[in-house]
Amino acid sequence: MHKGKSRGGKRGAGKAGAPAPDLVDAPYRKNELVTADIIGLTHDGEGVGRADGFTLFIQGALPGERVRAKVMKVKKQYGYARLEEILEASPSRIDVSCGIYKECGGCQLQHFDYDPQLEWKRQHVVDNLVRIGKLRVAGEEERGGAGKAEDDAEHGNRAGGTDAIIVHPTIGMDEPWRYRNKAAVPVGRGAEGEGLQAGFYARGSHRIIDMDDCLIQHELNDEVIRVVKRIGRELEVSPYDEETGRGVLRHVMARTGVVTGEIMVVLVTNSRKLPSADRWVERIREEMPAVKSIVQNVNERKTNVIFGDETRVLWGSEVIYDELDGIRFAISARSFYQVNPLQTVKLYRKAVEYAGLTGTEDVIDAYCGIGTISLFLARKAGRVYGVEIVPEAIEDAARNAELNGIKNATFEAGPAEVVIPRWREEGVTADIIVVDPPRKGCDQALLETILAMEPKRVVYVSCNPSTLARDLRVLEDGGYRTVEVTPVDMFPWTTHVECCSLLVRKDN
Ligand code: SAH
Image (cartoon, rainbow, N blue to C red):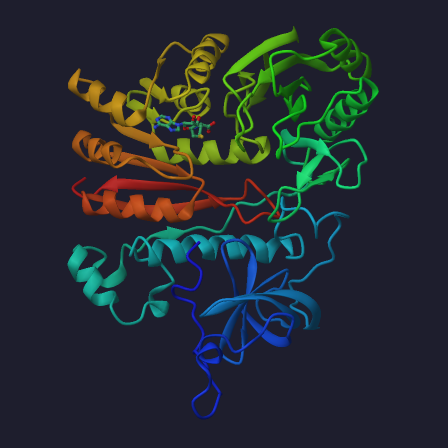
């Protein structure tokens, strides 16, 4: 994030005379205790505090609160402080149920009540649309301010605000816990020499904190992690050491098909050789009979990336199966599969609804992964063309179509920004284009191809509101109108927010 760019405090506010230059820029020193009023929440979930006009980012503080905090780091226009005491609590503050929340970097918002959290996520989306996309959002006109009219005139749209974008309330979960179907945790040696540990990196560091229970994780995944740790200690496997690059076991990944109950265990190792591989298999199966697939992935590189290129099945199936809305999916170790299945169904149904299918349309599903959205669409479309960069995912997608007797979906592996322009040259047309890119958003070449192909509708599924806003602006300028946006909470208690957006051609 670009902290400080627009959030700078009034430099040296309240200081008389001509203070020393360092005081002009930073009115506080490290370790100083300050009282701050919290006026907002950053996109990483830190409270934005104001102390005498100076901006301090305070993890754990909520908007509307007044807190005591200890200054930890001071920059020219802003600083970071540690929450010490809450002087006036927000009505949205709740008790945290997780014992490791303070240390763990996984969740950021467990102190924030669920309903206001959902509201905050919606507002976060709105702010991005307005600030980055320069888009007009219904209900936000009064927040607009100077410059808005010119923007509108320049972009030639939204006259009178009659067609402002509707941003719906965030679709939340009834029971926002234990939702994750996948856990991937680093393995290492405990700081106090406790031997093999696995858990998570402490907030903002690579120190591993041992974890046996994560409240947003499916119980079976937590069990896999506990079992693998136990076996690892039993077999005296050496944990990986990031500093030296030595040690065998780097990561454990557990994935559970929540509907089918099938489990995959992936051991990520530092070399091809996994000592006592047979014992590993035997012991995992003994402890967890529901395990259907035990896989080794080899990552010999000194990198933060979890997976290496080589994957081999140690025992059982190469894939596990899961079901979404009655469609069965085979999922292999390296394929992307949404982590919150209950919310995924809501998200995909929204995407299908926005696609407005009548049964005859040609649809392109870009960034299709294992063909999940594609197959949801195929049930209501004429033809679906899916494209995805990971070849294994495309193999899964083709298998998934077959598995479900779906004959009107075809898939191709490659970059969407290369494959779709080629399809266009080959004469493929699309009534609807669905995109679901990774966090960095759509490639410019893809956006240009979408504009050139002139689909009636574009459905944009996004896991990053800022790149969504950027890309919507390109599509708006190219002749599309963003009609509505529905945020879906795929990751309760974290700052992440997913959105499904509908765009239509303005000349339609
Ligand atoms: N729609 C799928 C996957 C979404 S995640 C689902 O809901 O499950 C984004 C996907 O984009 C990942 O599978 C990733 O491998 C893929 N991807 C990343 N860059 C790509 C590119 N340039 N072209 C095509 N696919 C890409």
